[in-house]
Length: 222
Image 1 (cartoon, one colour):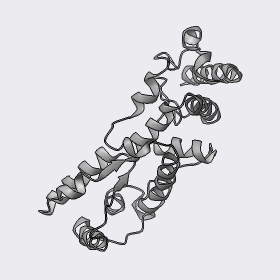
Image 2: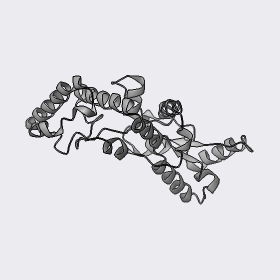
Image 3: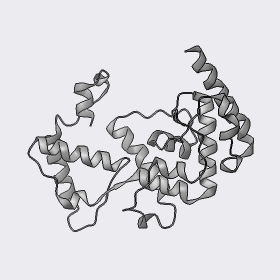
Image 4: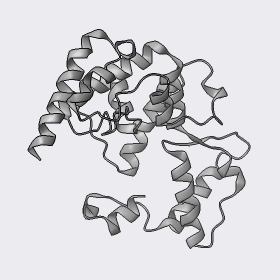
C-alpha cells in the first residue's frame, strides 16, 4: 500500500496519500462495499494470493478480521491472464515473440528472467497488450490499478474466462507448455539446445541469438 511505501521506502516522497493508515482505509473500504449490498461483487488484484495475505495480516495488526465474504470473492488477474496466454497457441507464440523482442531492447531481465523464463508480471503483460515495450509500472496504488483493470478487461474478452476464477495459473503455466529458453540462458554455449523454433516465430531466431550474445558479452564485462 502507498501508505507503507511513503513511510518506509527511500522513494516515499513520490507517493500521495488519501488515507493515513490501514484502519482508516478499511473503514472507507467497508463503507464503500455496503453501497452494493445485495449485489454480487468480485474483488480483483494482480497477485491476489500475495495481496489478500498482506491485506489479512495488516488487518490483524489493528485487531480487524477480514470477513469470509470478502476473502472468498477475491480473485487473481495474473492467474486469469496466464490462463488466457496458455489457452491459445497463437497468443502464446505472439507473447513469446514479444518477450524476446522486448528483452533484446532492454537487456534487463524485465521480459525474460535470468533463468530463461518468460515473465508473468503485470508490467510485462501490460506491455504486451498495449504494444508498448517501454512501459514502466509505477508501483503506485491508483496507477497500478488502472493497468491491472485493463489486463482484466483483456482477459474477459476470451470465452470461458468466468469458469477459471478458482483455478490457479502462474509463471509456470506459460513456461511449461513449451521448451523454455533454458537454464543456461546467459551462456552462448547453450544456444543450440535452447533454440526451439516451434515456440516462437522463425524470424525471431536471430533476435534470440542477439539477446544471448549481448547478455554473454555483458556478463564478461562485469
